[in-house]
Image (cartoon, rainbow, N blue to C red; front, side, top):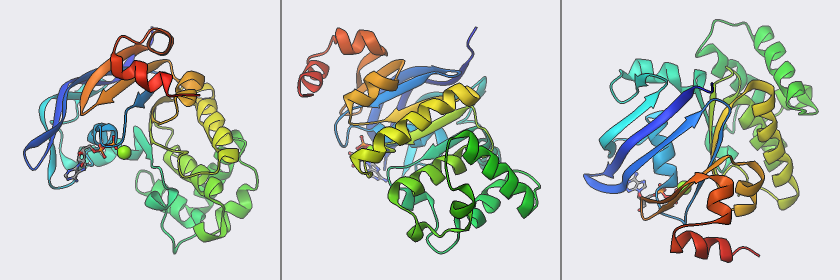
Length: 256
Ligand code: ADP
Ligand code: MG
């Protein structure tokens, strides 16, 4: 049986006491891919960040629970949260620049990321990273290791970001519009590499996207948000072929 590794139970999230996400429940099983869809401002990023405890000083989960396996991650200390981030749940953002430091090489950043979780030497980190790059069909690993982000293309940086998120082999990867800042020509490649992660490592992926085509190609399940509320949730083929909600029907009919 596939194990449920992430579960939101009637979650409400507020900024400065004002709810922006209301009554959201869903679950993610090992190796499952969940597409999170909805127009700008509907609460997709907020929902995702809550699993990482990254809501900042003004945001908080004001109702409901979020479980990582059996553990309620709203009940644990900041120190325990840090342990889960990276080691259990990796995250990548729309703009690789948001996760990469501009003035340090990719290799230096990989070494730092690994050291935050594990005692490793630089050489061990490099060996591990180059091995991961190779598994991910990420060519030119050695060059990437020595490069600064500005020396690489947007696609290369985003793939480096994915590799960094995967360093500790977390069972969950959260991806917030991972390809929307990229050229169309590299979008497909990055997405197929992400899908490949599931085959390689059994990673469960939650992906925020504007692209219904991405959902169709990748997702097992879909959650559609509108104004912070769930308007649709179910198996991708059911939601895409038989949307129950008028908003989802419009969203789907807007696709060429
Ligand atoms: P999406 O990712 O779907 O575009 P967001 O999750 O970024 O939407 O935002 C959802 C709502 O929460 C928006 O109304 C946004 O203005 C609000 N919001 C997001 N982050 C903050 C914040 N740090 N402080 C106040 N409001 C926020
Ligand atoms: Mg967003």
